[in-house]
Amino acid sequence: MCLLREREREMKAVGVRALNFRLNQFGETRKRFLRSFSTLMSPPSKAIVYEQHGSPDSVTRLVNLPPVEVRDNDVCVKMIAAPINPSDINRIEGVYPVRPPVPAVGGYEGVGEVYAVGSKVNALSPGDWVIPSPPSSGTWQTYVVKEESVWHKIDKSCPIEYASTITVNPLTALRMLEDFVSLASGDSMVQNGATSIVGQCVIQLARLRGISTINIIRDRAGSDEARENLKALGADQVFSESQLNVKNVKSLLGELPEPALGFNCVGGNAASLVLKFLRERGTMVTYGGMSKKPITVSTTSFIFKDLALKGFWLQNWLSLGKVKECREMIDYLLGLARDGKLQYETELAPFDEFPVALDKALGKVGRQPKQVITF
Image (cartoon, rainbow, N blue to C red; front, side, top):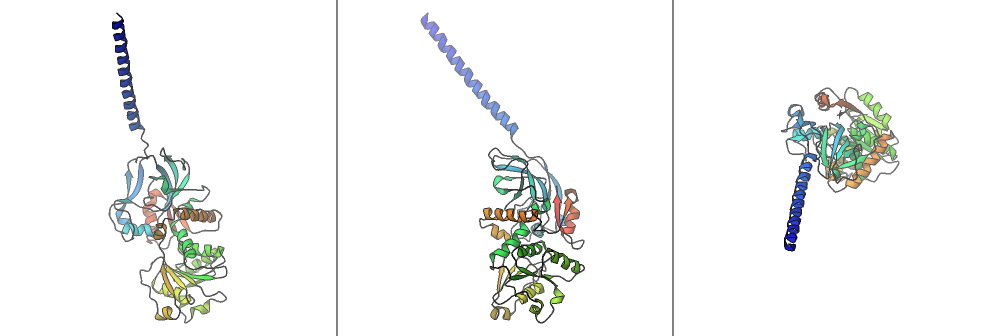
């Protein structure tokens, strides 16, 4: 009888263990089932996409993209604004040295608001404003999902037209002023392409350092207005190219010292004019070639003036592992913009009017401000 009862207890214990095992199995299955339905996803996104390289007004189109999984270390950002930069156009054309594989979403910089974060994201929260820093391709879309390390939190008080454009152009201006020639208060520098965003930033950043600027602009309709606008930003001297058709351009400097540093983003004759202003052992830094004409340097400039010619490409500088330094400078520049000490002209354009903004960025309707898409 005792043996029978002992056997019954053993059978009950086995049954309980089996039941518990099955319940555990069911629990794990249920957890996996629930996890499959609780995967964090972004909302569907609208994006400007190009599937082949070519003229941007021919190869770009608006498409609807499906939701994207937001993984543990990812951040989903709802874009607020993103500019159309010349380098964006060059990427779409297929002529920029570094470009994403096609098909690709356009855009390289911008500002957005954190929409959702993965389970392992600690430094960012929904509602934060962020920019990709260093810049990252694919900002011409309503929602962007990238790893937390891509995003840099910024102060919400900065106007969106500056927050979205602060990296490519203002940072180029800052780095060129600091990386090539050690200039002190009272020194001067010269540049062509002075009406560009970089040129405008150079004028203001130099002025903050007590450095005088000599600025060269193209001969075209509206040049008088452009001259006054640059002087309002702090330009010391502004010359059109035709005004520099003199034997000795340095005679136009007045009391300004001969510049030790020059910036060229045009090429051709405009680059030669920068070289004519430079003092002995001066340096000209080229960061663009808008005229698509080569730089011609006289033998005299090399032998008797010992001039140095160098180049600057922000992408190359950013690739040197300078993320922390980059973000510190971004915060500095955003602070200047927020305080009204760094200004440049932009035009906000709704996302659904992208084709119109693109035509303006391509120069189809004359000179226009920097186009900034708002989402």
